[in-house]
Length: 423
View 1 (cartoon, helix red, strand yellow):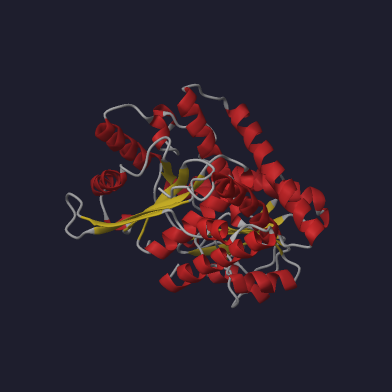
View 2: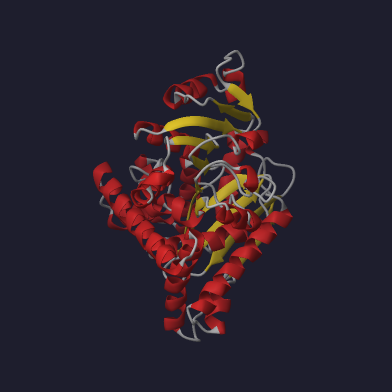
């Protein structure tokens, strides 16, 4: 996401929140409060073993419902506009699915491919040293995001506990099981999205067609979505990684592809270079190939005014954050293509992160069935409420989601009154 597209997305989300707040009758003061971050931390940090300073960010976006919650990404395109956009989306996400947390996001501007494991550990620990006053089990709970994982969360947890001098496992989620992580967390974003899709298709069975699915992105979220949907009887006809995409109208064996990709550590194009039955195409081409369900599961701003008119899917399930531009949304709506917004579709990740935080607080851990049942309940209920409001008010799912999310967080802000301290 470029600086300009990040900034535009952020302003569009602020505008949508404002419209929803005004429609719901909230005061100007309350609307202003929920459309602006409470706290922005932006530091240029020297890291041991690295010659140049690294920009590090944390944006905390409203804690009226509970402590801030949101991931940390390591990526060369991370900047303040992007982090603010992701943080405001997290506020909406937590509010919509009904978990008692606010929005936050963090990051560091670097390409992890250019650094050793030792250097990445140093960056992770430096991030915590920079932000430790702003995070805590009752204050702000980070988690993994793009290019961060359970190992990096382990470094961060260790650094934080060394600084504060006590055990505090709930300060970080997305941890390995051995350090207090939750079962089900790794596939939670994808599993939650599958539950949302299945609930919507109960209302709209005509949209499922032949159950042909294209998934842009084959990282953690995309690969789990592919295998979960394949197991549920869907046909995965297209997938992509950072190097390119593959498509076969008769379907792909995603379990086998995932196994081979992990073993060979190679690109999809290289894996299928000699297979005439599979089309090796550009990522941009994949989005407009025939399918019933399109799942953007990579980065932001992938579906735009330039390609929205050519998309052939009946449903778009946004497992990436902010993959669809506002202009594209309008085009898709006019073409009767249903877009399931990111702050509903991919909220399974933060939901199971919340479960992990609860388990850390209790120091009592749930089994996989309990996690899955509770995730299913939360995601299904949020989908039902969003769909019913959209149907009754002739809203898009995104408009309905904004209204529900804004109503809950704005009500919490209004109850707190004019003395609400934004720190």
